[in-house]
Image (cartoon, rainbow, N blue to C red; front, side, top):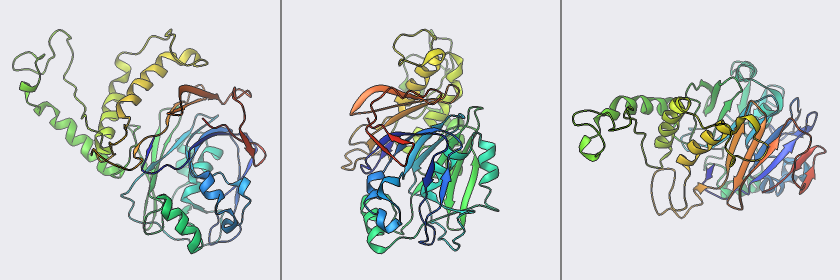
Length: 360
Protein backbone atom coordinates (compact mmCIF):
# COMPACT_ATOMS: atom_id res chain seq x y z
CA UNK A 1 0.00 0.00 0.00
CA UNK A 2 1.39 3.38 -0.99
CA UNK A 3 0.44 6.71 0.57
CA UNK A 4 1.39 10.29 -0.25
CA UNK A 5 2.00 11.04 3.42
CA UNK A 6 3.26 9.03 6.37
CA UNK A 7 0.09 8.20 8.30
CA UNK A 8 1.73 6.12 11.02
CA UNK A 9 0.68 2.56 10.27
CA UNK A 10 0.06 -0.13 12.87
CA UNK A 11 -1.13 -3.72 12.63
CA UNK A 12 -3.72 -4.94 15.09
CA UNK A 13 -6.27 -7.58 16.01
CA UNK A 14 -9.87 -7.24 17.22
CA UNK A 15 -11.55 -10.18 18.92
CA UNK A 16 -15.16 -11.22 18.48
CA UNK A 17 -17.68 -9.44 20.71
CA UNK A 18 -15.67 -6.22 21.03
CA UNK A 19 -17.56 -2.90 21.12
CA UNK A 20 -15.86 -0.27 18.98
CA UNK A 21 -16.50 3.48 19.01
CA UNK A 22 -17.48 5.15 15.73
CA UNK A 23 -16.92 8.73 14.62
CA UNK A 24 -19.70 11.21 15.44
CA UNK A 25 -22.45 12.05 12.99
CA UNK A 26 -23.71 15.66 13.32
CA UNK A 27 -21.27 16.09 16.24
CA UNK A 28 -23.52 14.05 18.50
CA UNK A 29 -22.28 11.30 20.78
CA UNK A 30 -20.68 8.68 18.54
CA UNK A 31 -22.31 5.35 17.90
CA UNK A 32 -20.75 1.95 18.40
CA UNK A 33 -20.48 -1.38 16.60
CA UNK A 34 -20.04 -4.73 18.34
CA UNK A 35 -17.94 -7.15 16.32
CA UNK A 36 -19.58 -10.33 15.07
CA UNK A 37 -16.24 -11.41 13.62
CA UNK A 38 -12.66 -11.18 14.81
CA UNK A 39 -10.40 -9.39 12.35
CA UNK A 40 -6.80 -8.40 11.75
CA UNK A 41 -6.22 -4.92 10.41
CA UNK A 42 -3.79 -2.27 9.27
CA UNK A 43 -4.59 0.99 11.06
CA UNK A 44 -3.58 4.34 9.65
CA UNK A 45 -3.85 7.65 11.51
CA UNK A 46 -4.88 6.15 14.86
CA UNK A 47 -2.50 8.44 16.74
CA UNK A 48 -3.63 11.37 14.61
CA UNK A 49 -7.25 10.78 15.63
CA UNK A 50 -6.20 10.25 19.24
CA UNK A 51 -4.81 13.79 19.17
CA UNK A 52 -8.31 15.15 18.42
CA UNK A 53 -10.19 12.63 20.59
CA UNK A 54 -11.61 15.35 22.84
CA UNK A 55 -13.27 16.93 19.82
CA UNK A 56 -14.74 13.54 18.94
CA UNK A 57 -16.14 13.20 22.46
CA UNK A 58 -14.42 9.83 22.85
CA UNK A 59 -11.60 8.51 24.99
CA UNK A 60 -8.25 8.52 23.23
CA UNK A 61 -7.72 4.83 23.97
CA UNK A 62 -10.98 3.97 22.18
CA UNK A 63 -9.90 5.40 18.81
CA UNK A 64 -9.29 2.83 16.08
CA UNK A 65 -9.45 4.94 12.91
CA UNK A 66 -8.59 4.53 10.15
CA UNK A 67 -8.70 0.81 9.25
CA UNK A 68 -7.07 0.97 5.82
CA UNK A 69 -6.90 -2.80 5.27
CA UNK A 70 -8.06 -5.94 7.03
CA UNK A 71 -9.31 -9.53 6.95
CA UNK A 72 -11.91 -11.13 9.23
CA UNK A 73 -12.33 -14.71 10.40
CA UNK A 74 -15.16 -15.25 7.91
CA UNK A 75 -12.82 -14.68 4.96
CA UNK A 76 -13.96 -11.14 4.07
CA UNK A 77 -11.37 -8.42 3.45
CA UNK A 78 -11.46 -4.66 2.98
CA UNK A 79 -8.86 -2.36 1.47
CA UNK A 80 -9.09 1.44 1.55
CA UNK A 81 -7.29 3.12 -1.34
CA UNK A 82 -6.53 6.78 -1.95
CA UNK A 83 -8.64 8.26 -4.77
CA UNK A 84 -8.14 11.89 -5.74
CA UNK A 85 -11.02 11.66 -8.23
CA UNK A 86 -13.66 11.61 -5.49
CA UNK A 87 -15.91 14.51 -6.59
CA UNK A 88 -17.40 15.18 -3.16
CA UNK A 89 -19.27 13.74 -0.23
CA UNK A 90 -22.77 14.15 1.15
CA UNK A 91 -22.70 15.98 4.46
CA UNK A 92 -24.65 14.53 7.32
CA UNK A 93 -28.29 15.58 7.32
CA UNK A 94 -29.42 13.15 10.01
CA UNK A 95 -28.23 12.12 13.44
CA UNK A 96 -29.73 8.64 13.13
CA UNK A 97 -26.59 6.51 13.39
CA UNK A 98 -28.58 3.35 12.66
CA UNK A 99 -28.61 4.13 8.94
CA UNK A 100 -25.84 6.75 8.61
CA UNK A 101 -22.12 6.25 9.03
CA UNK A 102 -18.90 8.14 8.48
CA UNK A 103 -16.94 6.93 5.46
CA UNK A 104 -13.87 6.54 7.67
CA UNK A 105 -15.73 3.98 9.81
CA UNK A 106 -17.02 1.96 6.89
CA UNK A 107 -14.08 -0.46 6.67
CA UNK A 108 -14.26 -1.20 10.40
CA UNK A 109 -18.01 -1.76 10.22
CA UNK A 110 -17.72 -4.13 7.24
CA UNK A 111 -14.98 -6.25 8.83
CA UNK A 112 -16.87 -6.44 12.11
CA UNK A 113 -20.22 -7.37 10.58
CA UNK A 114 -20.10 -9.44 7.38
CA UNK A 115 -18.58 -12.52 5.74
CA UNK A 116 -19.60 -12.22 2.07
CA UNK A 117 -19.75 -9.54 -0.60
CA UNK A 118 -23.45 -10.27 -1.04
CA UNK A 119 -24.11 -9.46 2.63
CA UNK A 120 -22.27 -6.16 2.21
CA UNK A 121 -24.28 -5.26 -0.90
CA UNK A 122 -27.57 -5.94 0.86
CA UNK A 123 -26.67 -4.10 4.07
CA UNK A 124 -25.10 -1.07 2.38
CA UNK A 125 -27.70 -0.65 -0.36
CA UNK A 126 -27.82 3.14 -0.97
CA UNK A 127 -31.61 3.09 -0.92
CA UNK A 128 -31.58 2.58 2.86
CA UNK A 129 -27.98 3.14 4.02
CA UNK A 130 -26.17 6.49 3.94
CA UNK A 131 -22.42 7.12 4.05
CA UNK A 132 -21.65 10.69 5.06
CA UNK A 133 -18.82 13.06 5.88
CA UNK A 134 -18.54 13.57 9.63
CA UNK A 135 -18.45 17.08 11.10
CA UNK A 136 -15.69 18.40 13.34
CA UNK A 137 -14.56 21.70 14.76
CA UNK A 138 -12.39 23.92 12.56
CA UNK A 139 -9.36 23.18 14.71
CA UNK A 140 -9.77 19.41 14.40
CA UNK A 141 -10.46 19.64 10.67
CA UNK A 142 -7.30 21.71 10.23
CA UNK A 143 -5.33 18.84 11.80
CA UNK A 144 -6.78 16.36 9.31
CA UNK A 145 -6.29 18.70 6.35
CA UNK A 146 -2.65 19.23 7.28
CA UNK A 147 -2.16 15.45 7.41
CA UNK A 148 -3.28 15.04 3.80
CA UNK A 149 -6.01 12.62 4.86
CA UNK A 150 -8.75 15.06 3.84
CA UNK A 151 -9.25 16.91 0.56
CA UNK A 152 -9.39 20.70 0.54
CA UNK A 153 -13.17 20.40 0.51
CA UNK A 154 -13.05 18.71 3.91
CA UNK A 155 -13.88 15.13 2.89
CA UNK A 156 -11.80 11.94 2.63
CA UNK A 157 -10.42 11.02 -0.80
CA UNK A 158 -10.89 7.26 -0.65
CA UNK A 159 -12.61 4.29 -2.22
CA UNK A 160 -12.96 0.76 -0.81
CA UNK A 161 -12.39 -2.71 -2.23
CA UNK A 162 -14.10 -5.72 -0.65
CA UNK A 163 -13.27 -9.39 -1.37
CA UNK A 164 -14.64 -12.64 0.04
CA UNK A 165 -13.51 -16.27 0.16
CA UNK A 166 -15.79 -17.15 -2.78
CA UNK A 167 -13.80 -14.87 -5.14
CA UNK A 168 -16.45 -12.15 -5.23
CA UNK A 169 -15.33 -8.52 -5.26
CA UNK A 170 -17.05 -5.18 -4.74
CA UNK A 171 -15.89 -1.56 -4.87
CA UNK A 172 -17.52 1.30 -2.95
CA UNK A 173 -17.02 4.80 -4.36
CA UNK A 174 -18.44 8.17 -3.42
CA UNK A 175 -20.15 11.12 -5.10
CA UNK A 176 -21.80 14.34 -3.98
CA UNK A 177 -25.06 12.40 -3.74
CA UNK A 178 -23.89 9.35 -1.82
CA UNK A 179 -22.06 6.05 -2.27
CA UNK A 180 -22.11 3.71 -5.26
CA UNK A 181 -21.60 -0.07 -5.22
CA UNK A 182 -19.70 -1.51 -8.20
CA UNK A 183 -19.28 -5.22 -8.91
CA UNK A 184 -15.60 -5.83 -9.61
CA UNK A 185 -15.07 -9.07 -11.58
CA UNK A 186 -11.34 -8.37 -12.09
CA UNK A 187 -10.87 -8.30 -8.31
CA UNK A 188 -8.43 -5.38 -8.58
CA UNK A 189 -8.38 -1.89 -7.10
CA UNK A 190 -5.69 0.78 -7.28
CA UNK A 191 -6.01 4.55 -6.87
CA UNK A 192 -7.59 6.97 -9.33
CA UNK A 193 -9.45 7.05 -11.66
CA UNK A 194 -12.66 5.57 -10.36
CA UNK A 195 -13.59 2.01 -11.23
CA UNK A 196 -15.79 2.46 -14.35
CA UNK A 197 -13.01 4.43 -16.06
CA UNK A 198 -10.44 1.82 -14.99
CA UNK A 199 -12.46 -0.86 -16.77
CA UNK A 200 -12.77 1.29 -19.88
CA UNK A 201 -9.00 1.69 -19.98
CA UNK A 202 -8.46 -2.03 -19.33
CA UNK A 203 -10.70 -2.97 -22.25
CA UNK A 204 -8.96 -0.48 -24.52
CA UNK A 205 -5.52 -1.79 -23.60
CA UNK A 206 -6.51 -5.42 -24.11
CA UNK A 207 -7.82 -4.59 -27.58
CA UNK A 208 -4.67 -2.71 -28.61
CA UNK A 209 -1.90 -4.81 -27.04
CA UNK A 210 -1.17 -6.67 -30.31
CA UNK A 211 -0.29 -3.35 -31.96
CA UNK A 212 3.08 -3.14 -30.20
CA UNK A 213 5.80 -2.81 -32.89
CA UNK A 214 7.39 -6.22 -33.32
CA UNK A 215 10.77 -4.64 -34.01
CA UNK A 216 11.01 -3.94 -30.29
CA UNK A 217 11.07 -7.67 -29.54
CA UNK A 218 13.85 -9.97 -30.70
CA UNK A 219 12.37 -13.27 -29.53
CA UNK A 220 9.29 -13.44 -31.75
CA UNK A 221 8.77 -15.38 -34.94
CA UNK A 222 8.75 -13.03 -37.96
CA UNK A 223 5.26 -11.77 -38.71
CA UNK A 224 3.72 -13.25 -35.56
CA UNK A 225 3.25 -12.54 -31.90
CA UNK A 226 4.36 -16.05 -30.91
CA UNK A 227 7.45 -16.00 -28.67
CA UNK A 228 10.26 -18.19 -30.00
CA UNK A 229 10.86 -21.48 -28.10
CA UNK A 230 8.11 -21.05 -25.50
CA UNK A 231 4.93 -21.95 -27.41
CA UNK A 232 3.11 -19.18 -25.55
CA UNK A 233 0.93 -16.19 -26.43
CA UNK A 234 2.13 -12.57 -26.50
CA UNK A 235 0.99 -11.03 -23.23
CA UNK A 236 2.51 -7.68 -22.30
CA UNK A 237 0.99 -5.73 -19.40
CA UNK A 238 1.95 -2.03 -19.20
CA UNK A 239 5.16 -1.40 -17.32
CA UNK A 240 4.89 2.08 -15.79
CA UNK A 241 3.91 2.79 -12.18
CA UNK A 242 0.78 4.90 -12.68
CA UNK A 243 -2.28 3.64 -10.85
CA UNK A 244 -4.00 3.08 -14.22
CA UNK A 245 -1.19 0.85 -15.48
CA UNK A 246 -0.93 -0.98 -12.19
CA UNK A 247 -4.67 -1.72 -12.37
CA UNK A 248 -4.28 -3.17 -15.88
CA UNK A 249 -1.13 -5.07 -14.90
CA UNK A 250 -2.84 -6.67 -11.89
CA UNK A 251 -5.98 -7.52 -13.86
CA UNK A 252 -3.96 -9.17 -16.63
CA UNK A 253 -1.74 -11.13 -14.23
CA UNK A 254 -4.72 -12.26 -12.16
CA UNK A 255 -6.38 -13.55 -15.32
CA UNK A 256 -3.52 -15.95 -16.10
CA UNK A 257 -2.36 -16.66 -12.54
CA UNK A 258 -3.97 -20.09 -12.54
CA UNK A 259 -2.29 -21.31 -15.73
CA UNK A 260 0.86 -22.32 -13.89
CA UNK A 261 1.03 -22.30 -10.11
CA UNK A 262 3.89 -22.58 -7.67
CA UNK A 263 4.46 -26.03 -6.15
CA UNK A 264 2.98 -26.30 -2.67
CA UNK A 265 6.18 -27.58 -1.05
CA UNK A 266 8.39 -24.49 -1.35
CA UNK A 267 10.45 -23.95 1.78
CA UNK A 268 10.65 -20.15 1.57
CA UNK A 269 6.97 -19.43 2.19
CA UNK A 270 6.28 -17.98 5.65
CA UNK A 271 5.90 -20.25 8.63
CA UNK A 272 2.29 -21.16 9.19
CA UNK A 273 1.20 -20.79 5.57
CA UNK A 274 0.42 -24.51 5.51
CA UNK A 275 -1.31 -25.91 2.42
CA UNK A 276 -1.51 -22.48 0.78
CA UNK A 277 2.25 -22.11 0.21
CA UNK A 278 2.02 -22.32 -3.57
CA UNK A 279 -0.82 -19.81 -3.78
CA UNK A 280 1.00 -17.55 -1.35
CA UNK A 281 4.14 -17.50 -3.52
CA UNK A 282 2.10 -16.77 -6.65
CA UNK A 283 0.32 -13.89 -4.91
CA UNK A 284 3.59 -12.42 -3.66
CA UNK A 285 5.07 -12.52 -7.17
CA UNK A 286 2.11 -10.57 -8.55
CA UNK A 287 2.19 -8.12 -5.63
CA UNK A 288 5.85 -7.37 -6.30
CA UNK A 289 5.01 -6.11 -9.81
CA UNK A 290 3.21 -3.03 -8.44
CA UNK A 291 5.51 -1.94 -5.61
CA UNK A 292 6.29 1.80 -5.77
CA UNK A 293 9.94 2.63 -4.95
CA UNK A 294 10.86 6.01 -3.42
CA UNK A 295 10.79 8.96 -5.88
CA UNK A 296 8.25 7.19 -8.13
CA UNK A 297 4.65 8.34 -7.66
CA UNK A 298 1.33 6.72 -8.49
CA UNK A 299 0.89 9.01 -11.49
CA UNK A 300 3.88 7.30 -13.10
CA UNK A 301 6.22 10.23 -12.54
CA UNK A 302 9.77 10.36 -11.18
CA UNK A 303 11.34 12.75 -8.70
CA UNK A 304 8.44 13.04 -6.27
CA UNK A 305 9.38 14.40 -2.85
CA UNK A 306 6.21 13.00 -1.25
CA UNK A 307 6.01 9.80 0.79
CA UNK A 308 4.33 8.28 -2.26
CA UNK A 309 5.93 4.85 -2.15
CA UNK A 310 4.92 1.45 -0.87
CA UNK A 311 5.08 1.79 2.91
CA UNK A 312 3.29 -1.46 3.80
CA UNK A 313 2.60 -4.73 1.96
CA UNK A 314 -0.16 -7.15 2.94
CA UNK A 315 -1.32 -10.53 1.66
CA UNK A 316 -4.64 -12.01 2.75
CA UNK A 317 -5.37 -15.73 2.80
CA UNK A 318 -9.17 -15.64 2.70
CA UNK A 319 -9.57 -19.42 2.72
CA UNK A 320 -7.36 -20.14 5.73
CA UNK A 321 -7.93 -16.89 7.64
CA UNK A 322 -4.32 -15.66 7.77
CA UNK A 323 -3.35 -11.99 7.44
CA UNK A 324 0.28 -11.45 6.33
CA UNK A 325 2.10 -8.12 6.54
CA UNK A 326 5.52 -6.55 6.23
CA UNK A 327 7.07 -3.08 6.08
CA UNK A 328 10.53 -1.60 5.49
CA UNK A 329 10.92 -1.56 9.29
CA UNK A 330 10.25 -5.30 9.40
CA UNK A 331 10.76 -6.72 5.88
CA UNK A 332 10.21 -10.36 6.85
CA UNK A 333 6.64 -11.51 6.30
CA UNK A 334 4.68 -12.00 9.52
CA UNK A 335 1.17 -13.32 9.96
CA UNK A 336 -1.90 -13.29 12.18
CA UNK A 337 -3.87 -16.53 12.11
CA UNK A 338 -7.47 -15.52 12.77
CA UNK A 339 -8.43 -19.09 13.59
CA UNK A 340 -5.86 -19.38 16.35
CA UNK A 341 -5.95 -17.62 19.70
CA UNK A 342 -2.15 -17.26 19.75
CA UNK A 343 -1.00 -14.14 17.88
CA UNK A 344 2.63 -15.23 18.03
CA UNK A 345 3.92 -11.71 18.73
CA UNK A 346 4.58 -9.58 21.77
CA UNK A 347 1.60 -7.31 22.43
CA UNK A 348 2.75 -3.72 22.29
CA UNK A 349 -0.43 -1.85 23.19
CA UNK A 350 -3.92 -2.92 24.20
CA UNK A 351 -7.00 -0.73 24.35
CA UNK A 352 -10.79 -0.84 24.15
CA UNK A 353 -10.80 -4.17 25.97
CA UNK A 354 -10.19 -6.74 23.25
CA UNK A 355 -8.25 -4.75 20.66
CA UNK A 356 -4.53 -5.37 20.38
CA UNK A 357 -2.10 -3.17 18.47
CA UNK A 358 0.78 -5.40 17.44
CA UNK A 359 2.97 -2.99 15.47
CA UNK A 360 5.72 -3.96 13.04
